[in-house]
Length: 247
Image (cartoon, rainbow, N blue to C red; front, side):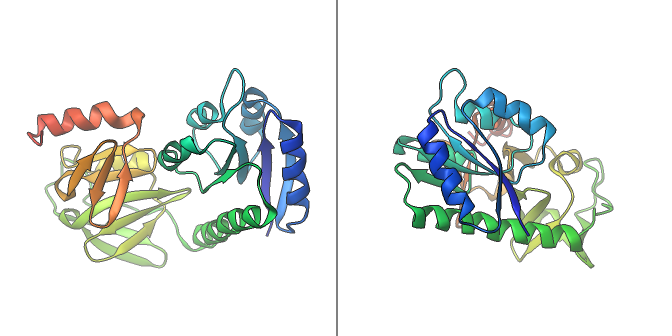
């Protein structure tokens, strides 16, 4: 199964190198190369892409700005000559971060990581279906719901949810006891969960307020997971903490 990909870099030599590397990987289908973010954005609106090799430092519109603009971004491997963007890459949930000059073995390692996720997502898309949520309204006083996960319908107690993680077309609900995969989307989940107990802190995360161990800078610790707080959701998150007398 092939992955459709594109490369974005304002340096032609860098684009040619990625193109040369991609041609050696049989499951990569490089559909095009772009030397600016704006033309890339137009292309993405019309085409289904699985992976972007994205340079950070570009004139007028940076790779970071492009990534923050895309509503439902594909997998991303950042390519840059500067290592100070590592934290931002983590916040944007990119798959890997390659420093130039990129050696071929490091390129292979990055795309292998993406391909493993890609195959997993494709398999889950085939075996899961949208969950008909029951008793999940925020006005409903029920302390649990039933979530469709693959061929099972799983009983989920709200007070056991630690956080909910977005993984492309599905969500993974992390509870105190297990991990539950479902095709419920973030919009539906946020409409259904109690907004005084659960809050979105990142494009890929909803967290349970009472499960926070600590907050440091722009990150939340829940159990052994460090969850980023993105600038998009930061103000609303801290306002809710203040409203609930957490701070």
